Amino acid sequence: MINLDLSEQEIIRRQSLEEIRSLGIDPYPAAEYNVNTNTTEILSNYSAEKNNFQDVIIAGRIMTRRIMGNASFLEIQDDKGKIQIYVKRDNLCPGEDKTLYNTVFKRLLDIGDIIGIKGNVFVTQMGETSINAVELTILSKSIRPLPIVKEKDGVVYDAFTDPDQRYRQRHLDLIVNPHVRDAFLKRTKLTNSMREFLNNKGYLEVETPILQPLYGGAAARPFKTHHNTHDQTLYLRIANELYLKRLIVGGFDGVYEFAKDFRNEGMDRFHNPEFTQMELYVAYKDYNWMMNTVEEMVEKIALDLHGTTEVQVGDHKINFKRPWKRFSMFEAIQHFTGIDISQMDENQLKETAKKLGVEVNETMGKGKIIDEIFGEMCEGKLIQPTFITDYPIEMSPLAKKHRTVDGLVERFEAICNGKEICNAYSELNDPIDQRERFEQQLILGKRGDEEAMVLDEDFLKAIEYGMPPTSGLGIGIDRLAMIMTNSQSIQDVLFFPQMRPEKKSQKDDTSKFTEAGIPAEWIAIIQKSGHLTVESLKGVNAASLHNKLCGTNKKHKLGLTNPSIDDIKSWLEKLN
Image 1 (cartoon, rainbow, N blue to C red):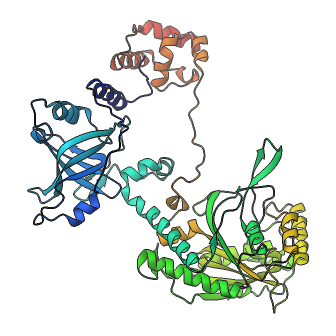
Image 2 (cartoon, rainbow, N blue to C red):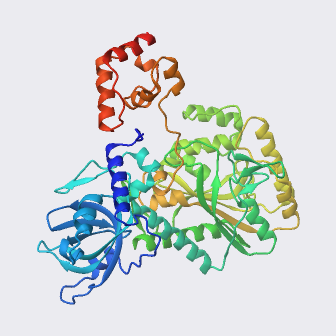
Image 3 (cartoon, helix red, strand yellow):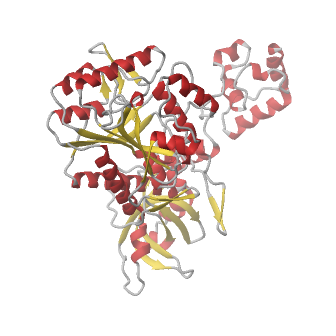
């Protein structure tokens, strides 16, 4: 029986596929296809006077077709762009057999098929640079039609723009919206620029475990898994900080890692459960040195991507030119609220938060409350790149105590376009102080703070051997890519973002239909007509259902004996 889940176009394409095979043509050949150019190279460098590109081999996907008599046009798209192909019957089929043009090209090929073309470049009478095809090879037959995006007089119709569908079907998004590639090309340039900067400084790129027996290095909820052989609970890392610091203990002066990290938290346009960050640790440096390094590195990235330090992000033009503005956290809160919270205790902070309309609860300690106040009242107002420095000690269990101000640590975050893009410390290397900080985190965890850190005994043992003064940095690649590509959502800079499960329509098992007295051969057709459950058939008009079933039987050439209206009435009566 024909698969009723297939659309009419899918059925036709499968029939075309079989006919292509019957002609002795392999629609999915295994042999290498030796492409020698691409669309951009041709369109940028072809010269009629030079008469170059006279023996080109190119491959791409058919995006449009204009089929005429003995000569036709199509447009193919490779990974650089689109180019017009001129296909003349007698050029493609110089002998008496015209099957390749008359049958294969005109009737059996479809938009979405991937083909190879050999030919020579010329300019049409309309002035369009094109390829005159002398050979055509089918490289992959498409059996599912693409969304057709139409354009006329500069106006786009039927665009594939639904964000949910674009993110779920990124392959389609890249095919029919090729402009989205630009963000991903820039993202790769961004990481290449960053890697070049760090390598030129002499730092070593390393890899550390993703599966960890304890999660640490950040305040976040982890994903949990199980190692069957060892009967051991493991966690997907929330950060790679504690492993990189072990390498500093081991004697490396500078190490960095582009890390996939995982946090079991909510999703929005700034957060994805799986994300990329670069962490850097350099011995004998402090957070002041790291601020200068971040400025230098991000300025370089902007120049490498845009040729300027000024980047348009939404309605704002952001300038990454050094030096960036600097505020302590308390200074920023006082600047934006007019309130000095630097000497407040936990109860006073809670009262202040309530006055400011900032939501807090009993599980929050002093540091968490300050963080909430800053996040609600300050962060979104910092558009130009700004360093926020000198955090309360309660907020930063892995940072070194401030050298001159009690109760603070040497930490900074860079805020840009209202969001944090990096976090850095003068790293805590006093093992006794570090143990006490971890123990304070355990107390917060017992109070109900799900993001409190756990005590990592192996890490504490490592720094007990002695870790040199070190500065560490974590910079969010996804966030920075959003800014550098003027993207409104993190999903726009991730090829395959995590998506909520699609809602699926409830569908009864076939046994429920047979129990209701409906013949088995008609169940799939009834469900194809939109009645996925037995309940949905109650109250249905018998004549209308009769027309749908008989029409589907005829359209798909199923060869079933059509039921009478009385038959259908009897099925429906049993349901009521």
